[in-house]
Image (tube, rainbow, N blue to C red):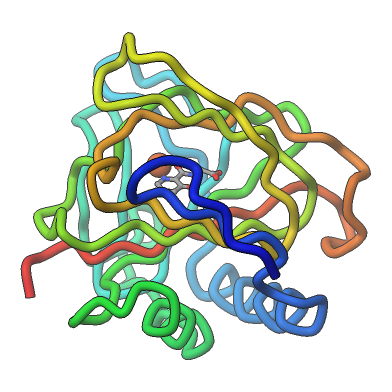
Length: 205
Ligand code: MD6
Ligand code: FE
């Protein structure tokens, strides 16, 4: 495990999760997906489908559709409440963020080798004093980190299975995205692909 300061408020904890912990996390994600199936979100206004499939756990889930981005307590397709955030993720949040309140959303992103995530900011939360904690599982991806403006210069680095990334502090609202996923770089997921989990505190504690 090594910790790298990528930028102010941005810390990469490389190989924070060992193989055992990664396998346990995949089991927890599979259980989440059984209760709240992955679905294909659509873009605001245009209704264009995302290449990433999503689901959530926690009291609030982040969703995107033609009407916009928002947090809501239920799955858009099933109408059921999101399942609870697995205890091991709550523990990881406490251990790595030290934030005074638990996360309310764990967004689950699933990438096949053709999926991408465009440059965006995580800005739909009220508790901007809390970092966003991200966990990567499965295939390696290239993460692009910019600055507070869309035109700010960017840097990119790889995220490997078991890496934990914290984005907070001065860069809590920095632009970022996933340029590409490299197929066949991990054997963690039996059918390949990449899972990214992002934990957020949404409301002010
Ligand atoms: C991903 N991650 O890694 C997408 N957002 O697939 C994010 O969008 C992200 O990793 C906020 C903080 C950390 C992240
Ligand atoms: Fe993000």
